[in-house]
Image 1 (spheres, rainbow, N blue to C red):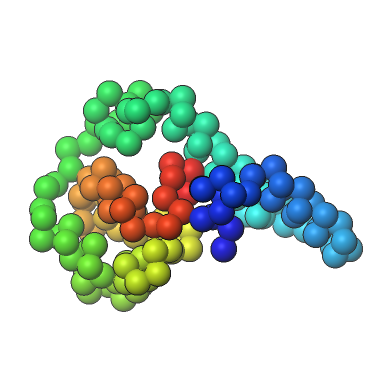
Image 2 (tube, helix red, strand yellow; image 1 turned 90 degrees about the vertical axis):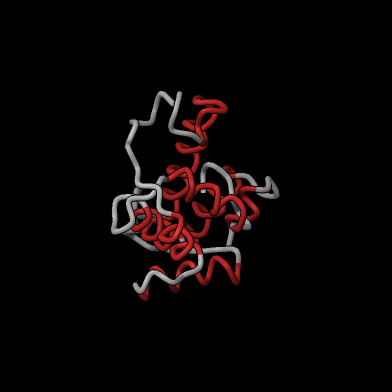
Length: 146
C-alpha cells in the first residue's frame, strides 16, 4: 500500500511515477493500461485533487464558501451517520468497507468511493463534511488527495 507513504511525504508521486514507467518497460508489455484506469492515472487523479484542494485553501474541507462546491441541503440524521460509521447499515459491501476502515485504518479507493456515495447520494443523504471528518480521523493516509 503506497498511499500512507505518499500522504506522509515519505515517497513522492514523481518517484512512484518513474518506478511504474520502469516496471512497465522492464515487463515488455506491449499494451499496458492507460490513464485513467492505470496506476499512473490514479497518481494523476491524486495530484489533481491535491492541486484543487490547495487552490481552494482552507475552504476545501467545507461546503460553505468553497468555490468548487455546490450547496446541498443534506439531511441531518445522527442515527444514520452512526450506522454508517460503525458498519451497521445493513448493506454488506458498505458495512465491510466501514469495518475495514475501523479495524485497519485503510480502504481501497473503490471502497472509499462506494461508502462516500452511499453516505451522500446513496441511501443516507448525509453531508459529505461529516464523512470527511470520519475519514480524516480514521484513515492512515488521510489527506485531500487520497
